[in-house]
Length: 143
Image 1: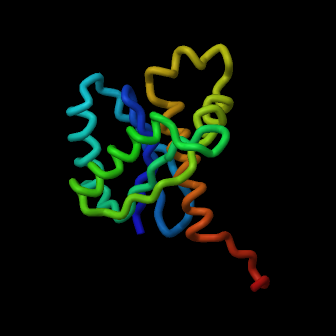
Image 2: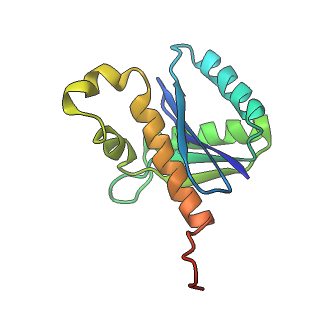
C-alpha cells in the first residue's frame, strides 16, 4: 500500500505520502499557477511513487453538511479515478488547514502561505487520519 494524501485547492494542492508503516509524511505542494501543469505533475508523482490509493480531503461544513467546495472535490475525485484507475478515499478535512497553520509561527504564516507548506501539512493530517483508521496502532502484549 502506497498512499498519496491530497489537500485539494484551486490555487495549491497539498500532498503527503504514506505506506503500510502507517506514518504520513508531507511532500512539496503543487503550486504552479496553471492548473493543467499541477495536474500533469500530480500524475507524474502518482506514477513515480507507484501510488496504490489516493486519499482526498473532503470539505464538510462545520454542521456536517456538504457545500459548494465539496462539489469541486467530488469532480476532482472523479477526474482522479478516471485518469488513474485508483481507489479514491474521501476523508473529512474539517479544520485540518487550521491545525496545520497553527504549527507555524504567527509571524511566518503570511510568508509561507503561497509556498504550499500549510496545504501539505494539511494533506499530511488528512492522510494520517486515514492511515490510523486503516492500520490501527498495536501495543506489544495487548490483543
